Every structure is written in C-alpha cells, then in structure tokens.
Length: 413
Image 1: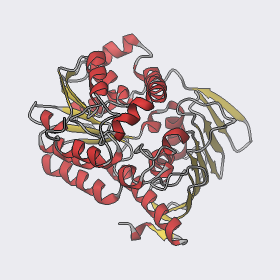
Image 2: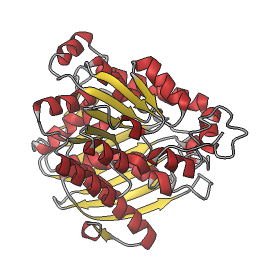
Image 3: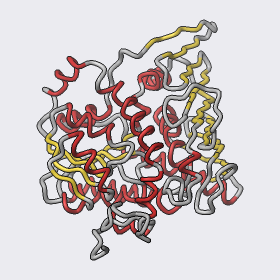
Image 4: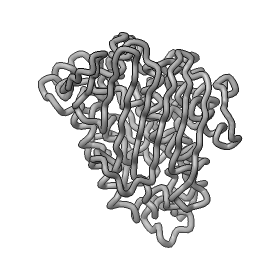
C-alpha cells in the first residue's frame, strides 16, 4: 500500500499523520492515516465550515453578476492553481473561475478534497503533490495549506514563474516571511497575503476614517475576536493550534486578523506585552486557546487585542466558525466602531452624535483585487511588509508570554 510517498508538503503531512499513498481509502487500517482519518471523522464539521466560508465569500464575489462580468474584462487571462482544497480554498477557486482564469490544477494530499474541488471548479488536473504542477506554466497560485507549508510552496511557485496569493498568516515566523519576500524580489513575482478583514467594507471605512484624521489623533484601540474552534483545537490529531504545523494557537490563527487591521491603521508596533494560555483545550500538543495582547505603536496608539478559540457559548451573533469580532478606535475628536462583520458602521463625532452607515453595497472583492493588481502592476493595500510585521507582533507576543515581560519589536527583527 505504501510503495512511495510524494515530496515536500505530502511528506510533511505524513510526518504529522497523513499518508498520501493510502489517500484515505482504508484509513482505519492504515497506521499513517491519522490525518486522513481526521478528515473522515470530522466530515460533518468540515462540511459546515466549508459551506459557511463559501457563503461568506460568495457575499463578496457573487453579490452582483453584472459587476462580475464587467470585472472579468479587466483581468488578463491567467492560468491558475490552488494548493490546499480544504475549508478555505473556495474563497479563491470561486473568484478565479468567475473572473476568467484557466483552472489548471488543484493540489491536496487528501483525494476526496482534490476530487471535490476539481469537479466543482473545473480544474484540469488534480495532484497530491504541488511539485507536479510546477511545470504547468501557472501564472497565479493560491496557497491554502496549513501554515507550516506556506513558505516552501510560495517560494517554489514563484521560482517556477507564478504570482502567489497566500492565505493568512503569511507564515509561522518572520524567518519564513523573509524567505518569501526574498523569493518575490529574486524572481520578480507578486506576493499577496490574504488578510481578508481589510476587504470587509466596514473595516475599510474604519481604516480610511482613522488615516484621514476624521477622529482626530487616535490614541486607544480595542480589537476582539471571539471564536469557537474547540472541536478542532481539542482534537490532538488535528493540525489546528499545534506549534509545529500552525505555529501557535488562536493568536497566529485568527488573532492576526485583528492585529493586521491595527497595523493598517497605526503602522509599526514598538513593544508588546501578552498573556497566552491554554485555559479550556486539553491536548498537550496544542498551543493557546485564549490570548490577551497589549500593543504600543510607534505612532503613540495603545491597542488591546482579545482573542479566543474556546467560546463554545458566545452571546454575540456568529457568522462563521462560531466567531464574532469587534474593533473600536478612540480619537481626540471622535471614535469609530464596527462589530461582527455586519454592514453597520458606527461613527461618533466630537459632539457625540452617532451616524449609522450601511456599507453592504460596497463591492470590494479580495481575489479580484489581487488579480487586478497583477494585471495592472499596482501595489496592494496589504503590503508584504505589513503582513510580515503582523507575524512579528505575534512572535513578540509569544515571547512576552513565555518570558513574562514586555518585548520590543527590535528583538524580533
């Protein structure tokens, strides 16, 4: 059954329990198929999350068919591939197809995943190993793998001539981020990091208000991401929340959403103080399920980030993964707040009058935006430097939690 294994990503997955040779055909009898068995055992949960994420993304790229047709004409013909066909890939595969890309290859070590994606989006090829797609003349690839495989896959595809759209976080640490940035510079390719919350219209409005000085000088911010990933976090065989594959727990997973928004508004961080604890999740191989982080930015803003993956009972309305979030910024002349990915946006002026803004008609699609940046050689609103700095803040937070002290960003590099 196990005559040979495929390279790189699949070998890495085998190390953590997957076996591409078996490919889930007989996972219960295969000693190396803990990862594949996990997908079978978790199929109901994964299907729910997958459907929710696709519906979530569809609100962006399917909201207006006429606008989509118009957009297709603006994007040059591109040969596309997707690495990783799990929960998140639909947010990239769907727009790729809708905006006129040639759907060349989907790669996933789990046969059921890649077959489903191939049937749904019309990929010409389906591989277990991404190396098999490197010679296919790919123009743009979406990296939707677990965090540990972002850097290798991104570097290899850029070397092969492809532009890269990589899921957040950029990587597990700044060293891996630097490898990716160096490859983009060396091979002359574009590297985009999918910090999707910057494309939430309410968040976009908030960023603009803050940067335009509409609330005066910002001095304090609070960002919360309250989520329920207890099922996967509490499963020792799932990569979610493991140090080795994920690079940490909730902070590097969904905490980066909030941190990246803060970086977009306030710039570089100066120092970080954090507590990261495993309060509810039990497996020894899992990192923190809850974190509190205080960030002092060079611009003089103090921000608090509160995140958890253990909120099985959350009073907030949930949008996906049982998650809810809120971001609030206080300024000398006003404040702004957005909550739970809703179209409602609150702007409070110096006179304490509140304005409710409905932004659900603003169509900012992340995948189309990245494709258009490639076609028109435009800079992205999400820079690789900001994405790297987001990871650096997470690294500083983990160091602070371990050592019980304030950590300067200069210590991270």
